[in-house]
Length: 379
Image 1 (cartoon, rainbow, N blue to C red):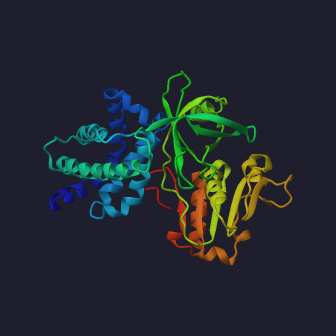
Image 2 (cartoon, one colour):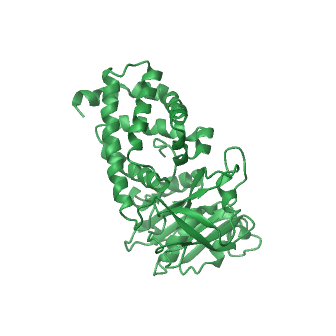
Image 3 (cartoon, rainbow, N blue to C red):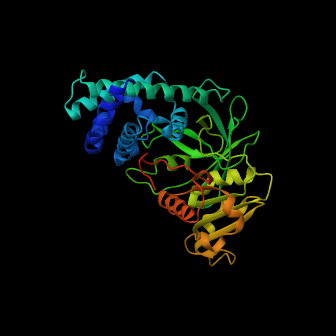
């Protein structure tokens, strides 16, 4: 980009702050009207709730604010690129998306394609698209398959609790793909109308095994904007065939020698369980909070060699558990000062734990989490 174009991008920041959501709402509505097939790579429930337009508006604004130092966004770009690969985004789709985004900018801000700000955004988008395409190509090269989705057979289903079931998946052809503990797979699921209209991501809850991949899925309360994916998974039977992506994700277990502390809440335990079970040492601590003992069968049925601390709302049936919300002060020890922390759970839980760790002087490089939220949602 030229210095003048960078200045034009920065000039657009006040307009993006005020009209960014209008732009992205117009963008998605127009995109799906003109290219309905693209709905398959988006979580449409996030469209209906407005989460996706808000996230895109925040990402565009963050890109504008960091246009002189885009390297600050590389971690977030990698996170999104992993998601793109998992749902089958194609390089050629970037031009379609870019054209519609520029059209929406022109429409909402009452600009013409020849205006300098629009031309600057055209160049900025192209540069960003090229970065994504390059990163996604590297991610795809990790897989032995040239297909975005391959067939797996359901070997076994274990009903861990009334709401959680574990699915053991075996590839119909070929080997079980390699992955790093903490990663997830995307699944093509049948919508309530019977169409294969859903793609959902589920963390792998078991370390790599030569015979299967395992996911553990909680059945969510089904509503207008949520629960369709988990209800589809809970309708599966042993022997069914399903379509799975290659393992993806940047929330991964590091191989350094630092003590590991895993902080989880609810079904957020799944990627952390894969991490903990993969370690060949007992030098780690898993701290989990949940409603009661019946809500965490995965934890009790797993062969965990490290230290485990439980915080339960109702600890009546588990005398060794702490009662109430997770309190790090209760279990803190000297090892934690130099430890790596991995956090997974609902967004409020993640925020609370990150803030607590910062209060205790834990460095940012020691805190690892993945949150599918707006780019500018800082805390």
